[in-house]
Image (cartoon, rainbow, N blue to C red; front, side, top):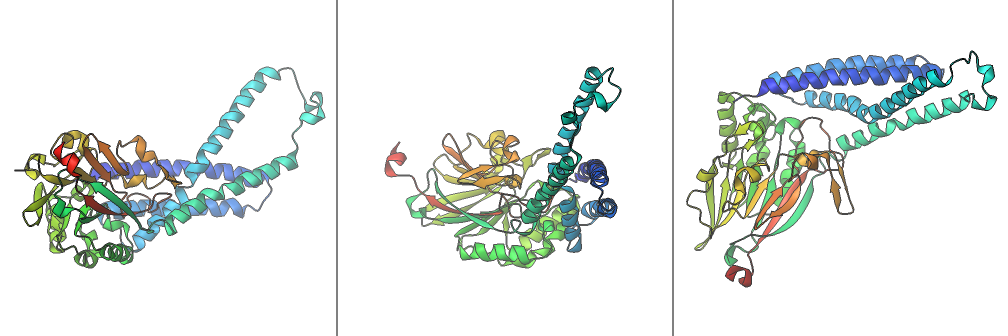
Length: 417
């Protein structure tokens, strides 16, 4: 059941990479400070912080993999992230500069042979040192921008929950169920919250939408079932007259069999109807809507049993499938009697650009369905951008999402067709 060793190794490699980037960037910073003739404390403090943040990183990795991130641990992880992540924007600039400098040196070896001193070079060619210092100060001043962007993503966007209102024409939905309201949340990752306050706000928004049905599409925790304690009381307060349903995600399997059983028991104890390859039926009179849920199937996991979840379902039924990983759509759902599949998992990449109706994230190069609504033939799939975070506790350009669906039944003409 546990996949912790692979997570530990990923954490180790990230830590090593982070240390190498720190050394590389700070070496350049040290050289720049000396050339600009600034106080040595400008780089001594930076090296001191690098040592402290490096130690904190390994402490957080230890806590993350053998206990759980909680309270102060999450704050420390945020500090380490704010220190390290912006350097990834500075790194390519320095690399390009070093490559250009190397090319110039190689070229000069071949073009300046026989020149023994600078007196043979016209005066206009000799670099203006003061101008170089001004450019260097400007360049290093601009390097503050990535830190500002990261800080905004950590303190402003992280819990700026956004409600997405989506109208869905669901195949075979009976007229009696037209207008049914479903709210979806996904990827809570309880271990990513310092305390219950952010999820309390999300719960308040959810209940204010007055959904008929509430669905939670997996990743309740990061790695440990005890993380659920942070938001347990708020989970108990989630309400929907036709039911609160949930399914498991990949992170809900990252532990031992005993811990997995504890997590399932803990989720169900809150009143959430956890569907593990099962289905429930929402009825109005004799009309029905099938809500099915599968366990997670995705990278290195294969727990979904779609045939069980859709037992006795016919092609005339209106069916919504809850499945955490959107890649499961292509693996087994496409062509099945499912009108709409709702998923999460991708977090919308957590980092991207969203403006003027356009949205971009590196996640779209990894996932065919990465955020929002897609239509594949007669079937629909919706991918929620998640509530919590995994990895860096920040969101840049991609806000945490609460999805509010309004279901519509097909027109009479479509029904006859």
